[in-house]
Image (cartoon, rainbow over all chains, first blue to last red; front, side, top):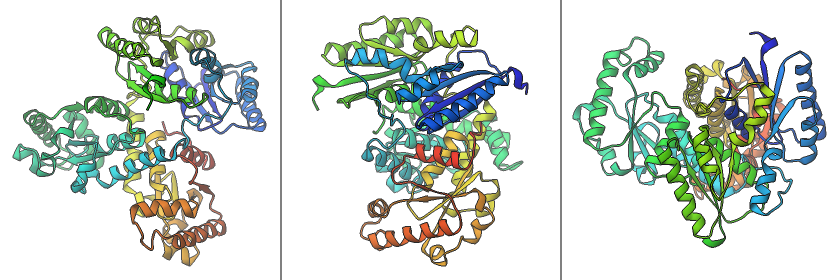
Length: 274
Length: 274
């Protein structure tokens, strides 16, 4: 890697840095790929810590690298220290608060942002409960709890059900169950009994056979379970089943869990639970 | 709820809306709590969809509600349509791209941002592998796989280990295992055999006894497992154990999973794996 030409991207925050990172990464998607390196500096909430962060960034600059800093510093003093340096800083609050203050006819208060903290204990518990629920009903377990599920994802083994359910629970507080459709289910060409009465909240995940083969292959190399033929057969049968039973299905192969979760919430008309 | 005085917050995006929401929620933490309602409008990527979104927002305005819109629309045409309306719009790209263009000496390209998409298939698989690993070694299972773990969290039952591990895996691609310390382990007053050789990457979670009691109580009401006495005893023993064994521990009671994960990565000197 050519260190000299790299773009050094820093995320500086007085909290977790998660928002600063989302902000910076979003903006950088609009520019040509450079050789980029990312450094997150979280919990920068004292004079000493901001000085240390500035030193670290200065050192990189003096080595000839280009530097871009994205920050979410709610404390005005710390923010000014960072902004007044020679490198480029885009601070979320400095950039966006003035116009928002006018819009809301209100001054902002320099309290530390709690975007990713426990702002409301009950909301947080709702979310953690959803995570626990989702883990308890993972992979077709405890189908008797399906009444409490907000959504049930069905699909063949390794089509992405579990990560999608966990993301729905963690990010949005959605109680998401998942049910693996195995060969026996697929050959009967009808919904398993466990899903029948919950058809309205059941959604399908489909995946292209080649991606499925690759994923299974890395898990159980050269098994009949991972073979292209088996994957083709299961995918064909599951698509037929979803069509026959009128189950809305989403293509998981080319989507990230974030995209799958967002798309499923839209289709199921689900809202964030907190 | 007084609908008339509520602040209606919209997040409009041509992708998942996750960044728009993080941005807006962060900024709003700086203002006094209103009666706020949040609506996410994802995948607004055509003229028809932006018109529908604008209509929806207009209707709310005409009902007398105050409206604030946060958007991440990478398409200039769609963005201008939204920005030129009567309501307040803070678009991430419109607000931040000009200064970033100067800093990078580069024009931005109007491609759709892929912040939460599958930008790099290998990076995405790293992350999903970490989720699978973490689920497989949840709750003290498969300790023989600890060699591949990036971090191991130890703590009493219901101290927040599992959600923290899952967040570490999902968000940062960290392979996080967790080991529940049960009474038998605690009374021996030394690390269980499974953890001994991995002491360097083992971190503790501690929780205050009252919070622990409440969490256990909601799970197994009025059990001896949930009793305040039992919780007090376990917390006292686990704190002693961590001290004796020189295990760095984090207080989970007042921290969200995002904060716990960020803090643990800092202490363990772990970097995002993609």
